[in-house]
Structure formats: C-alpha cells, structure tokens
Length: 67
Image 1 (tube, rainbow, N blue to C red):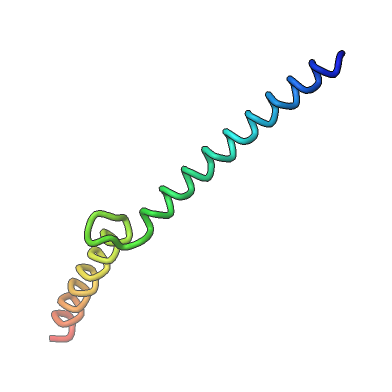
Image 2 (cartoon, one colour):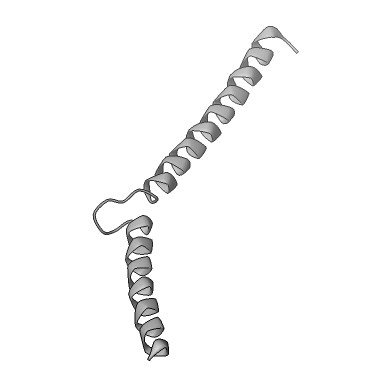
C-alpha cells in the first residue's frame, strides 16, 4: 500500500470515530437534559409531581388506618 492509501484509511477511520463520538455526546447531552427540572415538561418534574401525590395518598391512607 502506498502512503496515499494509508493516509486515506487514516482519514476515514478518524472521521468514523469522530462522528461516533459526536453522536454519543449529543445523545448523552439530550438524555441528561431530561433529568433536570425545567418547569413542567421534563422527566424530573414528572417524578417530583408523582412523589408529591404519593406522599399525600400515603398520608390519607395512614390517617384512615389510625382511626
């Protein structure tokens, strides 16, 4: 193989690795963005609302069983 062919292979491999790394970085960034509260539409906000509702239901059930 000539030097030009090795250079072409090196550029191709570098491009594939860089695009894969960029794709993974983009995915991680957007998945982690869902875990931060943003005023109502994130997964974190949904879980917080569910925890509040479950706590209030638990208080109602615990109060009824003590009577």
